[in-house]
Image (cartoon, rainbow, N blue to C red):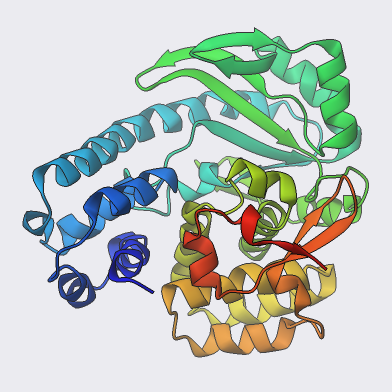
Length: 358
């Protein structure tokens, strides 16, 4: 793997990036436009800036590269306040919910990262399928409408779009409300009721997750138990990384998702009780493939040397590992594979072109 790609992966570690490694990689002349492109495309520009600033290495990159990353970091830093304000505005709404729910991903992660490293344009909520109608009524009562934002303009969804999304995607059409906060004109809520693409396949897992929620967001809003939260991150990463439509869009692999998992491992994997419970939960719920895929490749990408993680991977490893290099096309049922190391796959500019039918 070339030095540019190695530097990108080290910068993705953000606050835990190793200064000596960064300094060594930056000794030679590097293709900084290529590096910058990958950092922006993978939504980790703020993390890269923080890593360089903390390591006191900003002076080693050119002004254009440095200023671009700085602008992203400062934008994220300020937008975090808007995102937290939007979250806080939902506390009273959540208090009215008469059904189980859990806020996902950025809503909880924003508080685990150093400020400015992780923000979000939307809020993800997990609920049981049977509660969609009730949630819809609660959100519409406080001004949310279903539709999409395109070019800073809200486009209402048609009844057909609303029904189709609910029937085929495991999520609703987004709920959108104009909030006019700094850096956030609209607040978007994505409602999920499935871990996969097809509703009904994993309803029992969703129900199990929602029976174990904890009030860990602003001490009031419910999110998943920590072990379940990590499992959900893994399942979400896996479903997008291994489906043909995401490969075709070039959105199958986004490094920020691996950064979220890496952060979670750093924060909690040293806790023996957490590690033991995680193994038990993965095996009991049956998310072995999803978690093994995401955790194994996180270990590989970030070169994580951790005894507890190694033990976990051994305990949850599926018997057949062919899925690790496979991509599924749900429309045709065809399975495709690739022949290259995962680090090379991540940086491959034509992943679809490297796939062959198995």
